[in-house]
Length: 304
Length: 329
Image: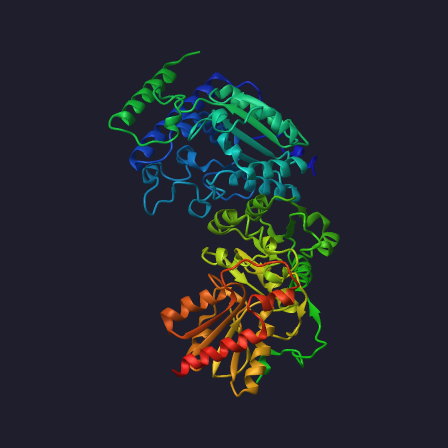
């Protein structure tokens, strides 16, 4: 089965090899989108009066690259059979996914303000049946990767060309089911599966290495039969580079260990594990938005 | 008298009646289901033979998936496969799936409304010598409160085969409860089977015995003994525990006025509980419960254990007498 997925054409045109290095304009475009997604995270979580900020902000650059550069998808035809599947395993960071889906055109941006409210399609953790192309019902940790592995296996059985992308948290790797899924994927050489790990070293109770050490993290994946690629998860160029490299690899599933800064873009949240999730106090959301708007202006003014 | 519509074997009480485990019926059914639908796949967790999947593996090697001893992955991975268009049958001992993988069953399969078929074998104390650790007698109770899922506990190997085919055809989460031990095959290919439609196997108006799984045979035997005492028991094979056949139950409560529920499961939360919940709100009816009385199982021979935990024919007869006595007061 391993050889099949390698014949999958690169997007958008199999005859044109993509440049591994992004044009500066493209980087700028994706950075501006990431900034916009961060602003949506702040406003939607602030109105919900609960939810997570640190992870979503740290993953904004990766979501910008995925939805606006990498994935083969069609917001106007969300259940397109040949779409790439993106599974969010650490479902609690869904505000960033909702923001990206809204900006991509899956639903109106205003709907983001219904996050976590009664009757909303934007549940506190993702529910597939509620929103087209959400792909899985997950959030209880470890269960998204297991579903992604099942999908990738089924896709290979049928010789499908679509890829399965999964986003997982590092703390999530405490769960036994993660290693069950990693084990199965390694044995079955699921090279149509790319798992992007948000390696931000925080979990609810503190630093991942204090709560339950994960290092040597990369070696664990290697021992289970995976390709391992490292990247700087808040550097658009490097995220794209890692994804391009992932697609050149065969015969093993691929994990991209993306080092990110939790709370990225909001100075008082960065690297502070308390901002994994806590309600905003008066003025905090406004201050965050102020910083993000200043950054937006800086990127816009940037010339190369 | 036996209901001719049930089309049971000529003599369900013959000493030499054929004996087969219900898991064997699944093994035949899943092959038929796979022939009918190319999306049917089987996932095993290192119990291929005892969950009766060897023949499937032989006939459909590319559609047989070894998950390893990873029951949580078995359930969640199957949800992923279902979302990619497969119809996965996930098979293990009921103790481990849905037992160990309960949260994945609940969240990834049922909340997700994934088209996964959970096959839990070795349910009940009749697993025997393996002892309490492996005797799933809480599985119905843990699955029953979950929305979206259908639960079927077939009474013999023939019904298990039909249930497997019906489960493959219906869309949505499905739990098939199977037993390890050989039990009498008393239905026939002609016996009716439809998910959600209970079968009345014996007519009678003095009380109704509502049973599921292989113990339906004990219920029939008990009804014969009661008939000798002049008590006519209606015997209902309630193979589908969820959704319950409320029409058949309401008719039984109305016409018989007393119910005995019979299951190889904890009394708490199983078929008896489902029957009581429905009757309490629709037509409060005297009910006696046959099942495991809030204790764990233990090692022993299957027949010994059924007697030890109060699920033998004599226990059903005694419960029926109690119910009738209560009714007369």
